[in-house]
Length: 374
Image (cartoon, rainbow, N blue to C red):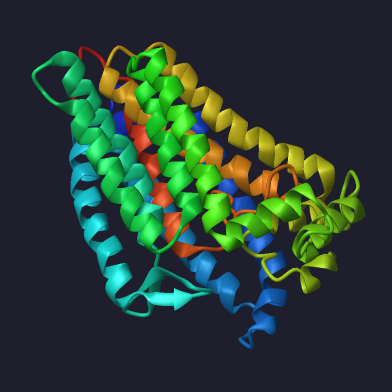
């Protein structure tokens, strides 16, 4: 692709000279690190559930080329194409969320997955990027035309999604969706009084979840009081970081993953800490920070409200999801099952994040002579 001339007017030629190549490179590096860590972490998990040692790794590695194609394919879209894709995707995902409640596979007391042609699909992963772009469109339309009820529509979409997620139940995704919407509402100019009110309602909802959902209470109690609950996984996670030191034991040489049930998913950052060390963990953190901060830097120069809101929501999802995963592994927050973007095991998460970041690349492409893209 580097051989494309600046005068090349083909689709790929125009794409290459307008896309943010540094962000694309950072995403590819994250995918590559995810492949390496999956090879290191998944055999122990596979052995525990009685399948071939590298079966989980093979599944994830087989999806990486498709994820890269989704990133590139989505980045070819125009802002209008991104909006149309998100609206159609959101409608389809809402149907899938409803089907999940009716015919979904129940795992650990939650119905979050659909088995489709041998592939276990988690619709809640896909709803996040489509939600962020769709409500950005309605909020931007409301700013341009006060007669459009953009805010009520956005809040209505959020209520429908949150209701379906809580019925699964999936509190973590509910909190993340709410945070994405809250950030976008704030950037769209919601009065500070309303921001404070929504913040207070969010805190009240978390308090209600603590008293009404036993598993939420157990995780918070375990975080606040070491003697209050099961801390087996977090103790093994912290042990892995201590074992790794600055430079790690080497790929495949870690031992804690053999005793850490979710080493390939929720606690893969601990595997990175033990086998690659502090330096590699800082590189991973830096890659996430680079993608998010570079994206927001683009938004400082953006004149389209839709593009600014959509990109901000997508970047917030990407950054918050990484922070939640790494914070849980480091015992900085109560444990929450959430994938580390492009690194943890999970086909639905991988493909949904690829779609979201492909949309970011599409929205941050250099556009000359274009007005408000809604």
